[in-house]
Length: 280
Image 1 (spheres, rainbow, N blue to C red):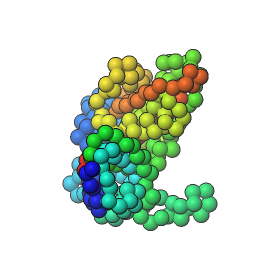
Image 2 (cartoon, one colour; image 1 turned 90 degrees about the horizontal axis):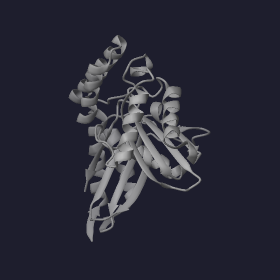
Image 3 (cartoon, helix red, strand yellow; image 1 turned 45 degrees about the horizontal axis):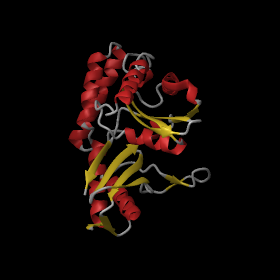
């Protein structure tokens, strides 16, 4: 049994938060450059250029990419042959607390969500998803999820008979209703199948996949490509001001479901897709 001390988890996570909150991944930057070349709307091209300049400045000066520094989402995949010395949840929350402090990130989490809404002052608690996997490693994936995009998430419990076209229509409805609110160009996480809560989980976890990497399942990859084409045909464009580029990519996950169900979860991510991973 391999041992990992909780202090290693906190330190690795805080470092990851500082890095991802101030510098976009190469996949996102490449997609934004391609979007700039593809966009025909003058306003859209100006916006995309500003986004690229913003990313460059944030990376150079180590300042936040966006004023909405997000809810801290942590996906923890723990190998079944790993023993953690200490409490995993406490270690993750300490890492979040330290990372948000070190990078001077806005603290956005409030307790008592439907009453006093008091800021917790350290951006905790994080939203933590844990999975047990084979091996003796601990993988931590961090996502800073801003609420402009998160508020546009939708869950559809469709009738199975609507099939492939029904799934696409659900995504198009979500994106069209969202308009400029999620700060397009967006990235679309799509979860199809399983149950309501599993579909929502899959939609968000799908956003961790690097842009430009299609699903390994041919049928799902084809769905991703068709959804992307039709979303970009809506004409919403960068920041909702019109244009060809409404989405940079679509990442979908699918799972077996009940014969009477067709859950479809849509999780939208803004262009400032801040995420990364570390393996201990």
